[in-house]
Length: 343
Image (cartoon, rainbow, N blue to C red; front, top):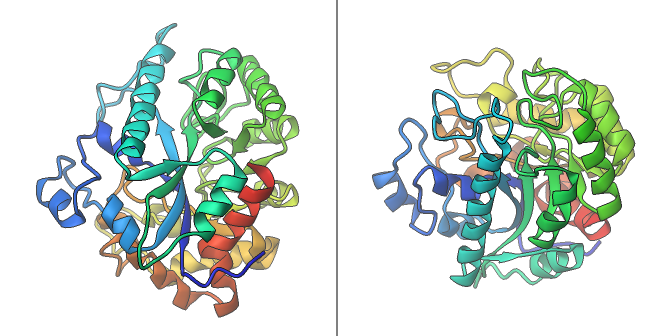
């Protein structure tokens, strides 16, 4: 793999279009967004201009349909037989947003590993272009069934995480359980259709079945359960299954996922603590399987990001906590190599 001396970053998990559902305008400067941000208590770190300034060349941008909750009452109703149609409307709306951003020159949708590689290697920090975005569906409820996969693949979706919490397809975060029959059908269709499995959020029982059905697997944003308890994080067995299949794991920049027992009001986790997850993965499973999947502005803001982070570009502070020779792989090289081989 060609050495990338231009300092670019590849982030495997950014909820860009989700922000627009909350009323955020990512085309503003970060300063202007913060001045008028409609999301209370979550200081934003991500806008397109900030990502350009931080030299983020490419990312996996999500289609995330949010279930109804006290915090988001307008979400889709998982209890209704046709509740998935509300999830589909959210995902279609976000897909349309990505297309509008592309038309306006803010992003470039990338549908293959060849396109990702060409985009990243052509990135010029002195004249940064549009952000390269490959679409990742986080939570599979926008699909009515496995037969919908053809539509979403044609629309540009290249990765799917079947779960978030519990979905119609799989057990997930704080919602233990196996794949449903519908989930098994989806994983088979994903394997046959060349859509990658994102194992983030999968419960252990669903994970074991899923990787057996679709072995082309990553974890776009998952820290280590050895360091932080809970089924949101990867056990050693899960991390081994991903890395043995050639996958990469993205590091999440959320204090609750970095330090066990962290609660609102506690001092923010440090970059050193975040680096412990990178070191654990790298030393146990191989540094070539470690990347970034920050999830910044994905349901949390500056208040829960590592201490010292003020803007997205401060992600680079992680470099000082890692072996010098591993940083290029973590910030871009490992995801780029994986994408070339698997997308």
